[in-house]
Length: 389
Ligand SMILES: Cc1cc2nc3c(=O)[nH]c(=O)nc-3n(C[C@H](O)[C@H](O)[C@H](O)COP(=O)(O)OP(=O)(O)OC[C@H]3O[C@@H](n4cnc5c(N)ncnc54)[C@H](O)[C@@H]3O)c2cc1C
Image (tube, rainbow, N blue to C red; front, side, top):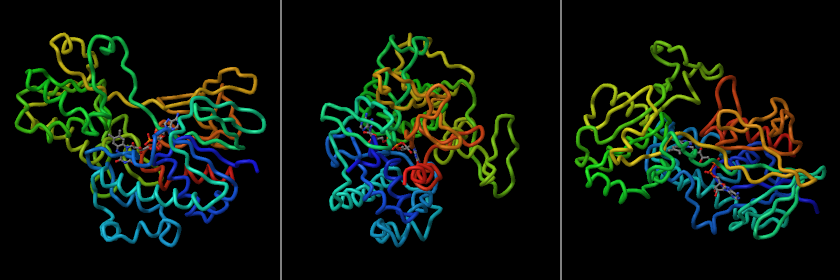
């Protein structure tokens, strides 16, 4: 029997497809049709998506409201901790806790697939390349290959590489992802003990999350000016529509559906608070340089660079039926989708049957990208399932 769908990646965005199928009453149809997930991590024990040691940037409701309370994931909602979240949906909890919850959702999917002859989640299946043909997609890795009618890329994104003028070759640098996972503490501590400055490059949510992390983790060890932050422009701020509307800046975007200001592009939560505190002069150890993105003067004095300049989609090599390499259309560090069919595009044309979801593969809404929690309850997964099933 032909496999209906393959999914590359088993992160939060891939979970979102199963959660949306359950929400729409199509989960069994998806499993019966045949779904194969290829995840490069060696085993489920290594699953730690979103396990960042910072607060989520939106309330816990965002992670819960796409989950059907009488569906396949109901057992995950019944635990006392989650019941407490449901009673206080406005609560903001740490991403480590969110990750642990998502892990339980992932476990449900693993259990479901175990009982289905046509469905499987394969760990240790890194996908190196994809070949597209009229009949569908062949996915290849060192583990072998498999074919399906449709393919979803849910491989996430990685921290953007630095350019030479950003200090790429000149120095050892850390990426924000490692810092926020708590994996770079020894290196950061060593730099501080040597009297070196920590130079955060970028004005993203990750950049101000990193600053918040450093302030908390290294409290008492940060002399005046220990943290330098370079942003090309002042980051936009998220705000809710309720209450007194803040004065709008020229670049602010109002979301037509929710009325929120800078819904998908502004700093929220703890990252937003950190920026406002820095601007108010709360932290003598942090200096903010807006309009400046050249780290070289600091690097020449030995500063340790933390790259928080944003993310770029991870895209496996893509070939057409003749073996010619195809490049998917990208804009603003995100893959482009056909506005009607939601398929990914090559040279301005939809590539039939190829879809994407998650970080680097977000839907576009007007001038913004619907990044973040939207993968769990937003339209992206629903659009893909509607096309596939
Ligand atoms: C600092 C920070 C804070 C954030 N805060 C929030 C927040 O509060 N709320 C929120 O919703 N989002 C937040 N995000 C975004 C969050 O990371 C994403 O929403 C989420 O992780 C995206 O899920 P994903 O499945 O697209 O990507 P990932 O989590 O990266 O998952 C992709 C999966 O694909 C696998 N993979 C990749 N390439 C291959 C391949 N070639 N073959 C096989 N498998 C592959 C990976 O191993 C991984 O398991 C934050 C991100 C950062 C960096």
